[in-house]
Length: 364
Image (cartoon, rainbow, N blue to C red; front, side, top):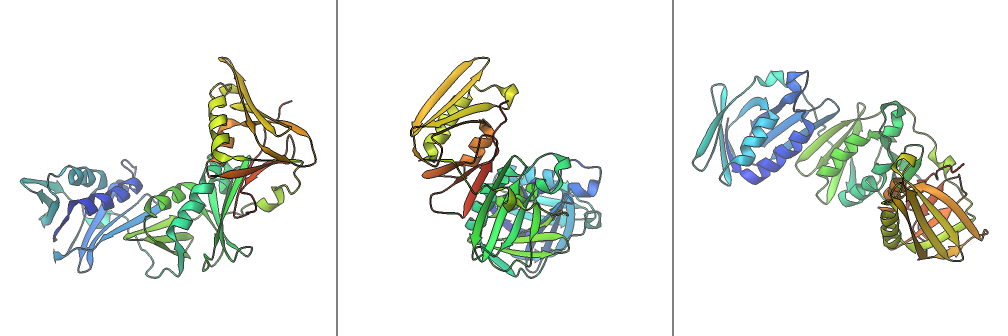
């Protein structure tokens, strides 16, 4: 192996690989990055058994070769190099890395000790990368974190007949969010992507387009020079449409930014041992937000547009859940209250491509 390339793209590619490859593992092979120099360029591959990654660099290769070595070690060495250009070549069982007046020798491992990884050669589904990033970002927070919650720990990417495209959905039973991707056609069927896999996909969506393939219980993504295989979740995602209310006795229209800031300020005094509770009271076009804890009590009142059949409503929320739901909105948001114990729905006026739902706290 003999190759010369710029330090910056190599360090960036290794950064992506290092996030996937575990620093320590009972299986020593999982700590490795496999570095392959071919006529087509340089490939860096690694896995944690749930997510596989391949980073490709378009460089001139003077001599082909294939080695493996600890990903974290190689990454640290490359980032610390003094120059802008890196020379790498194989000398017996050592990888020589040189830059400017610095050089080092890294002990390599037989590449057969690294897991064998395969990636699709064709990606039949194409989506706008920014649109997919927005969809995943706007629903990811609603996925469950507890191991026992099974498919609730994932984000469903479904074929949507409603918008002739796709929809991303997540719920943990206490909150729910969906975001539509109109025109994102080509998915062969619905899939459930683990939330941690969604996190990794989001980190590589930095180009104009993303290409997707589904098969063999995995979702494969190609974004620029990065390919990911994400192991899909088994199970049936709940029929979330059945739990979304359709009748709202009280609806308020308010600036999303103003509401976020008010809830953030008031929640500083919320009791952390009581689900971080904040109380909301709507009446006569005003929304009062209050919280009380061991350090005191605070409240703030906002002027809002109020509509509906009921003149007033009082209910309580976990402040974090409410702020998470509000985070994906800008401008004006409609907060639709279906009842003191039934879900509250947040959406943009006259639009239905994005929805967030939060279940109020029981107060008795």
